Length: 190
Image 1 (spheres, helix red, strand yellow):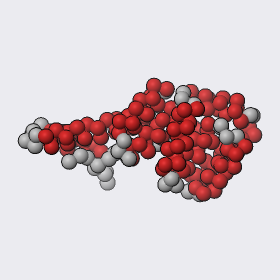
Image 2: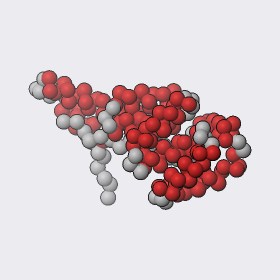
Image 3: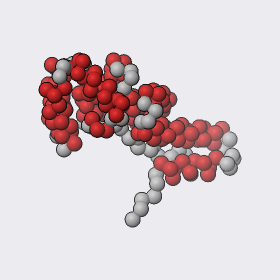
Image 4: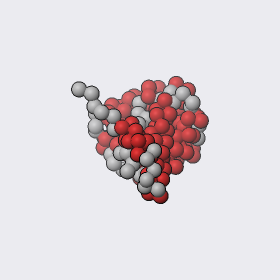
């Protein structure tokens, strides 16, 4: 009796989708790790273009080629994780995001994308913790706040369902479950 799982939002691979502070941190880190950014700017653009056009195999090949020369590049590693996730290679994507959280714990986007993967596997407590880290790192990260709300709603639905299993006659719970179900599946507008 729990609502359908809300779809969490993942961060996009494009640099413009990152909050400004994180974008500057990532670019500064990329400069320190990868050398002059201008040399690699076209590579980011091309990988992003290939990803957005659905050419995931080509995007992954370009990302991996870039990373063979600059293996610690946080932006390209993040983009690789997004490509792997979009390609259905969730376990590999999770490894990429976990490694990014370990190597660059100040970046919020890897925590957010890791949380999306964890929530999809119903590992809601771990997803909540990852989203809380993303928000701690960037309190203005709206996507992480929205995703945390979705995870908390799923946790609430789980608790309400458990309460109904224990005591099926609790009439106050059914309306709460229905409200969460409507929240997770809003009616479509014509």
